[in-house]
Amino acid sequence: MAEYIHESSYVDDGAVIGDGTKIWHFCHIQKNSVIGKNCTLGQNVNVSENVTIGNNVKIQNNVSVYEGVTLEDGVFCGPSCVFTNDLFPRSFKRPSEYYKTLVKAGASLGANSTVVCGVTIGRYALIAAGAVVTKDVPDYALMLGIPARQHGYVCKCGTPLDNNYSCTSCNGKYYFDNNNNLTELIND
Image: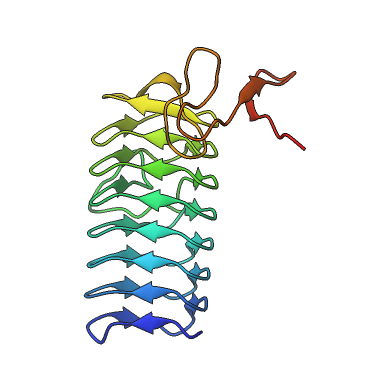
């Protein structure tokens, strides 16, 4: 299945767009960016040069994914969430290299959240609407506030985990591994 690109959007030569991806009104996809399969980019999304976006990513309206940002498979970016790529911006200088930001598989960023560059957001982490992420986020972490602080953990399905690290919605169960990382318990 071929991608869909609305006629008001612009895709630079050299950009790669995967099958089944939909790019809606007034988007700009810049050269040397790669967007995976079955993604959805809402109205007014900008994808800068050299950005990599995985498969099944959903980017809501008014989001700019700047150079230095990588979004792995299944990431959700809520409306107007913000990425940065320069810790000390000045209008009269361009950095020689952009800070790297990695959003790992399945993570969700709420509406109007901000991700300060140079951090890694763990797998299936949930960043609340309006939160400002200034440091690395563990897998499955629930982050709230300014600056964002951890307030528990969430299941893969997005439901906050109870005190036994179990999900009351889908019955998922989690434990801490030998490296003190929350890990999903897989039942055979």
